[in-house]
Image (cartoon, rainbow over all chains, first blue to last red; front, side, top):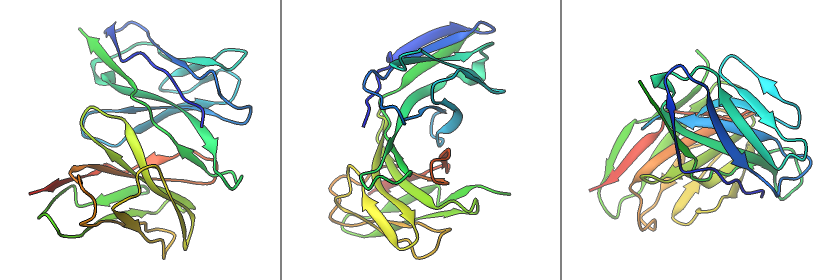
Length: 115
Length: 111
């Protein structure tokens, strides 16, 4: 499985953009990059995912480098409610070669949004 | 209302007892997963199931057992063989390569 590396923590001022980096230098060609976030004592919440093109939805934007070895999650206007642990994950094919993939979580980045 | 339901939210167990955590989904997803989370840590995969009547061990399956008799349900049993069962347990489901969605978790405490 491809491993991901994220900074352990980041701060962001309310109303500013939060840019969360993730390195996944061993990613395979068919693996997607997923982002989830987890607020304390709740289940992880899906944010966005992509393969090689940049993606945007109502929550965030995902920028993937051309070599796919890293990506950045952008929260364009962070609010206090965006304070959470953000996980960057690459989805691995299972051992049998089917399309179901395990989600392997790392330590994530603790994002703190302050007033 | 579609989603994944885990019950109960809080569970207490005496040492040496088995306990079963419930996970139900009405999303018509084929795949289901169980994760364990310890304080300040990421999620670790216990078991996953790609289809009814089939499941595979994850990274930390020892002391746990699962069944997948119905598509909607994937219960996890924490057995007395699990040496450190106190943790936050999370269930998820997905449709083939689709996005995985998580329940709100069950916090198990051994007393």
